Length: 245
Image 1 (cartoon, rainbow, N blue to C red):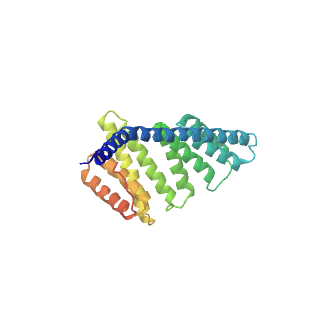
Image 2 (image 1 turned 90 degrees about the vertical axis):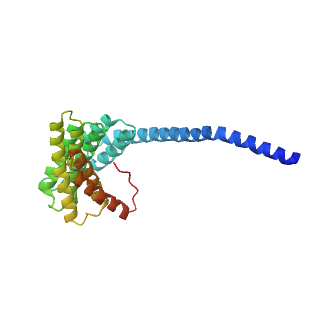
Image 3 (image 1 turned 60 degrees about the vertical axis):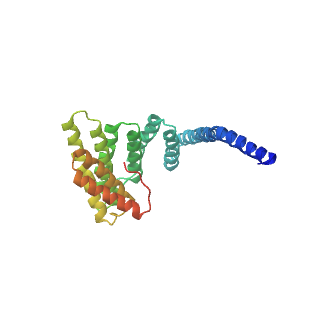
C-alpha cells in the first residue's frame, strides 16, 4: 500500500470519527432549534390573538367577530397547554350565543358547547366534559333529523368519555358499569353511521377503535377482535397508517 493511499485512508477514518461524533450534536441542535422556533411562533400567536380578542370584547355587538376572536385565542391557549383559560373563553360563549336563535337549531351555541367539552376532556375534567356532551346530544336530538351525522358524533363522544371515566374507577363493578354504558353509546353511534352510509368512513373507524377498547376491557374478546378487524379494514381502505390504541 503506497504512502498516498495510507494518508487518504487516515483522512477518511478521521472524517468518519468526527462526523460520527458531531452528527448527534447537530441533530439535537436542529431539534432544539425547532422547539425554540415553535415556542417563539406560539408566543407571537398568543399575543396577536389576545390583542384581537380584547379588541373584540370592546364591541360585543359584533358577535361574529367576538366569537371568531375568542376561538382563535382559545386555540392558541390550548396549544400552550393553558386549558383553564381556554375553557373560560368557551364557557363565556355559551350565554353569549344561547339567545341568538329561538325554536330552531343554534349552531353557534352548539359549537361553543362542543369546544368547551373538548377542552374539559383535554384538562382531564371528565365529569364536566360528559355534562357538555350529554347536553349537546339532547339538544341535537331535539332540533336535528334523527339521521344527522352530528348525532352519531355526539353518541361517539359520550361513549368515549364514559370509557375514560370508567378507566378512573378503582372498583371493578363501577368500572364495568361505565364500560357497559360506553359500549351502548358507541354501538348506537356505529349503527347510525352505517344507516347514513358512513359505515366505511374515518369516523366509523374511530368509533370501531373505541368499541375495541371498551369490549376488550369488558372482557368480551370476541366482539373486541371483530371491531378491531373492521377498524383495520377501514384504515387500510383509506390508506391510513394508524397505530393500534
